[in-house]
Structure formats: C-alpha cells, structure tokens
Amino acid sequence: MDGGWERTRSAMDLIHDWAATDAEPGERAPVMLNDETLRDGLQSPSVTDPPVEEKLRLLHLMEGLGIEHACIGLPGAGPRQREAVERLCREIATNRMRVRPNCAGRTLESDVRPMLEVRDATGVDIEVCVFIGSSPIRQYTEGWAIDELLERTRTAVSFAVREGADVMFVTEDTTRSAPETLRLLYTAAIDSGAKRICLCDTVGSAVPAGVTNLVNWTRALVAELGVDVGIDWHGHRDRGLGLANTLAAAEAGATRLHATALGVGERVGNAAMEEVLVNLRLLGLRAGDLLLLPEYVAVASAALGVPIPASHPIVGRDAFRTATGVHASAIVKARAKGDAWLVDHVYSGVPASWVGREQEIEIGPMAGASNVVHFLATRGLQHDRATVDAVLAHAKRTDRVLTESEVMELLRELVAGAESAE
Image (cartoon, rainbow, N blue to C red; front, top):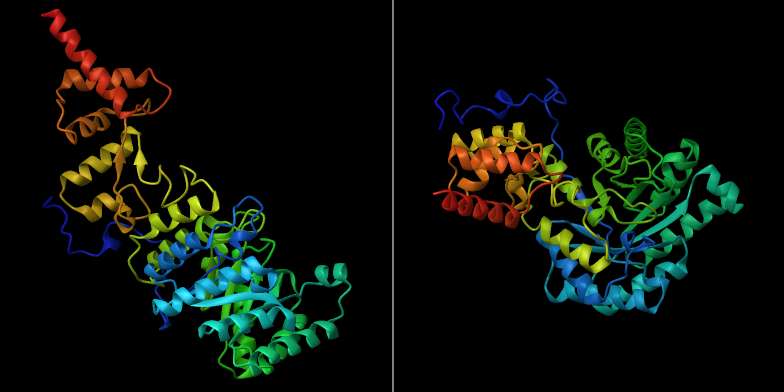
C-alpha cells in the first residue's frame, strides 16, 4: 500500500461531502421499504403480467434483500389477480417469510372484501391499502364532493379495521392536494383506525422541496392528533424526479418508501428499487447486503419483458465500465495501491463491490495506454510498448469500444506480421 495514505483514516479525508452538515444526526429507525413491482409495476402499459412462478421468484429475492413489505396485487381486479395474491400468501406462510404483504384497492367494501377472504384462506395477515383521489382537479373531473370522499373513507377504513386488518389510507395525487382537504381526509382515516397514511405523487409532478414541505406538514398533523401513525411515500417519475423525491421524503421523515424493480409502473413508472436501496445505504438510512440486487433486477426484467438499459445505474452493463483514458489511468493507479476501497471509489459514486461487480476497463477511441496495458495484463498477455502502441493506434481509428475477440484477433495479426518480417 502507498505509504502516503493510510487506510485507517476516515473516507472524508479523501471525499468531501457537500451534503454533510455540522448538526448531530438525530436517532431514527431505519427507513422501511414497500416493493410495488407486483402491483404498480404491472400497471405499466408495456409489461407482461408474469406467471405466478416468476412472481414467487421475485418475492423470494425481495426477502433476500431485506425488503420489509410487498404490495402483491389487487385481488379485487379479477380471478387471475386474486389467485396470484393467494398463491403468494401461501408461499409466505409455507416458508415463514419475513416480508409482509399488502394489497391495494379503492375505498370500497367490495375491494376490501377479497383481501380479507385471501387472508382468511391463507392465515396470512394482509395490510389493506385503500386509496381515494384527493386533489381538486380529480374532484372536479369526477364530480366528487368532499363529504362523499369523507364518507367513503370512513366506511372503507372502519370496515377493514372491524375485520381485524391493519389499514394504510392512501390519498392519490397528494402532491397537488390542498392542505385543508388532506387534513379532513387523514383525520377521518386515522379516527377510523388507519395505522399508516400514504402520500402520493401520482402523476410525478412534485419537486424535492415540495416533498419536504408535504412530509413535514404531515408529520406535524400526526403529532397534533397525538397518534402513532406511519407515513409512506409513493412517487412517480414523470419529470424524472422519482428517486430525488423519494430520498427527500426519507430525509424529511417518511418511515416507509415505495419503489419497483427497474422503476416500472404506471406511465413512465416509479422510483427504481435498486436505486433507492443503494442510495439509502449510501446515506446511512439503511444497511444490508445488496449482492442479490443484480439478480433481483434481472429476474424482474425477464419476467416483465422490460430490458435493462446499458446505462441504467447500478445494474446496467455500463454502470462500472469505462473506455476513457483518464478514468482508466486513475483506476489502474488505485489498484496498484492495493486498496479495494480506493478502486471502488476513485471514479465511481457507487461501490461496485456492493452488487458483486468491479470496475471494468475497455479499449476504444477515447482510450489511453493505461486501458491497453490493463486489458492485456489482466489476461496474462504480452504488453510491451510496441504491442500497446499498436493496439492503441488501432483503437483510435475505430468508432466504438473493441470487443475482446477483436483485440485478440488484432494481437494474432501483430504476431503474424512480426513473424513474417523475420
């Protein structure tokens, strides 16, 4: 190891965090997660609703990642959905899984009843999540009066509570709703027995500052009511802010966050679970092994028929891959110091080792000699100056990264040319 830097020093000696403050961090419970892949994820117009066997695989991967809760469907939507929900609950019971299921439905007894029937058939408690539109634009469009919304809220929540279920009350389009309306709805739901309330950025219109204001307002309301009620955040990414808003909700004090594999969901989708998991760990808001994350995303991708973009953060093909000379040179120098942490961080904001990967160095038109030396040396190939220069010169004439087979063929040509010149 390089004597100029001792690994025992804090990471802050090498990486300055502009988000850090001098304030002492307050004690708080780790943020919980609710996986919506098997509900909101299936509402994407481009996905395939997979067979139940694939849903079971995903459920076990959620369990392996330590995800506490999973929305496993809308049993009131039809026989196929109900059968899948029941099968997933039986899997949870048989394997004594830790992940706790919930189901979504409208604030109607007819939507709640199928959840309770599945619960009774399987012996697995299902958190009842009932939703209602709360924004003025929805009320105007639907012709709803606030008294009607309050009556539906009280009726549905009270029914589920009387039947022994835990209830989360969900306001659709919360981020475009007036505080006086939210106060009435949340108070009615809490008075009727709801244990959690869910704030929704249903159309992805929010920005982080607005999310912070909303969560703070909600926490103040809960404190004013003097109740122990959890606060969920469910955000979409129509403006590309799904992850940023979700992290803002966590920092502001939301206690459970919703996300889906690859961010699939209604329209352009939700916050991506793989990004939320990694960022919560980076922020110190959550711990846990993430080595199953690539498999979780790969299984979801195959099951739903959604390809993984090469540039997708954390799990994309290019997430820890470079063909640029300056980047490659720094990574090579970090490796020479014999410190895996340094390699993981010198040119990456996410440690590749967290998801079982490592920094990859390729050869392309933006490459430098370090790229070629590393590529050849790690494969036990000759990397004298003449060979390195020849490969680099060839790469500079191309318009893309060279494949391994192309480099090997070039090396064979170089050897053949040298032999014929003798």
